[in-house]
Length: 335
Image 1: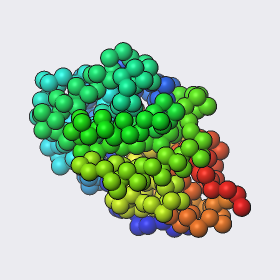
Image 2: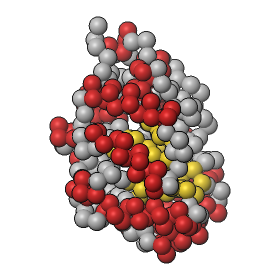
Image 3: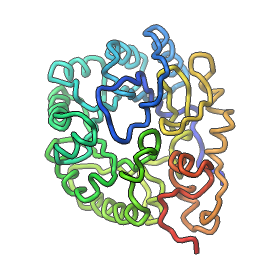
């Protein structure tokens, strides 16, 4: 089914500038990626390509992006060329001085991963002692420096019973937004899915609660990225397309320049160093399939399919091998 109009270029490029990380997260999708990092001059050349293609924003990730020693210079180069610059970080390396330098480098937003209001739970999930304490301190330093902050929380079995605590933690930290990420089942997330992932019924109950909180919690935006919330008659208000946004509004660049639809879909559709970004965006067969998914199984008769388009493409592909299949998290019965 044809989706909404696709923009002339990706609005956002999520860029894993390094695969190195100082954490040992139980759900990490990039631990097995041994791709080499690109050098500074090559990275700056890519930035110029993104600017020329009229990409609006670049979001640096990884790995832990701050392990790249030249990240501040790369960010400044991007900001000077008109790109909105943001980053996802575990926060461990952000002290007051680093926050100030991030502001000077042009970072408009920084998201910090915090997966539980309980330090011991977060630290165990992320594999590093004091990581919770350092994450909350990073949020305070970033706020002091004048950078918009958000919290990213991967919803799974470690925190499903403390969603209220996550929201209260976010409010007390003074962030503008908390992102509740659905569990993707990629990388270590696939290896540990039986230990960490929720059942479809648990996902339904979580989203019922989270949608209600969106309407009642003041002073904090709660973001839900999962297309299957359409089954509950809900859609994120700022979403310009139906279903997954990956390959429709955004693309992912790996540390070696390979282009994939998103960080959780390991299908290479080009390489930014050798390929024209707009050519890939317009003509990739993989992106075409993602934008024109054909319903299968229970999706064929589902009234919500026109909105959710089968749910999360990355998760469906990882667990079923066919992006057109129903999302394994979907709680709708076959009948």
